Length: 146
Image 1 (cartoon, rainbow, N blue to C red):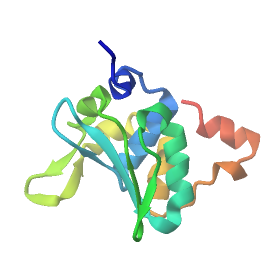
Image 2 (cartoon, helix red, strand yellow; image 1 turned 135 degrees about the vertical axis):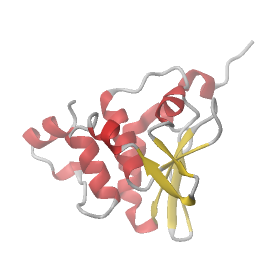
Image 3 (spheres, helix red, strand yellow; image 1 turned 45 degrees about the vertical axis):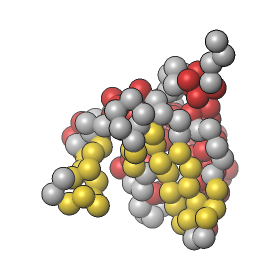
């Protein structure tokens, strides 16, 4: 029986760079969507941030089935459903008292954050602009290692 490509993608373990992009994104503008067993990461930015969204898409690689798309003033993409998102759901969840707000167990997340994850978070909230193409080699080595 043939296997759907998304079923294969669900078995690919995230590397440390992908995990840091996920952590930083979830601390910023991204959210987990879907029910247990079918959770995905949804990334959305203003359309003028297409290069940044594309950078995230490239880092997440095979976890994303469809390239970022611009719809009106927003660029979005979603990952395939992956068990790691079920594992992270208790750290990043919806606040039941404020349904439109995200709740984060920051103590647990910050303990796992590397400089790359922090840079993604700060880029998502507009504190800095992450442009890996302008890194000097030492900065790139630091940002892309755990």
